[in-house]
Amino acid sequence: MRTALVVEIEGLLFDTRTVRTDALQEALAQEGATIGADAVASAHDAVPVAIALERLAPLLTLDATGRELVVHRAAEHAGRIFSIHAPSFDATVRDALEVLAAEFPLAVVTRASAEQAQTWLERIGLDASVLTIRSLAALDPVEYVASWADTLRRTHASRGVAIAPPALLRSAQRAGFRTVQLGPDPDLTESGYHPDARLESLSQVHADFLASLH
Image: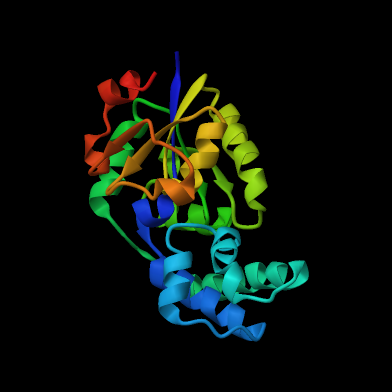
């Protein structure tokens, strides 16, 4: 049974947190919403803008059109910054993914645009190891499950293991993936899922471990 490994590269491989926070705060300000940086950073931590806006909903008076504008503008602002300053990356994680890609089909599901992700992967020499990239940037959260499922189909694997933030792993699990949470325990109340495994770092992911996730 062929197993694909699908990862979110933002947060796991590339450090984009500050840029994403600043971009969302600027987009909100353009819609007349003044929210503190700490609140925006907490809401936007490791999740797409659409989920961040759901978390910030009690502080906002945006209608559907306003939310769409914020999503679009936040992406524009972040893209402008990334075009000048590429995000820093973790070389240890890059090397680990390169090793894993030699044994398992490797794909990416990410908050970044597909173009951004491709550019970043090319810059660190990992692009040849990734079979396909699926962006969640312009999608409504209800579409995430279909995106995970489509990504798995594109790898031609019969099963998938997802490594991503808790807010994205819930949709991956609903798409039939086994899920791996890196780092501390997720907020199960908010994320609404229980991971199949929890590890301290990507270095603990290897062939025997992936095979054990039935």
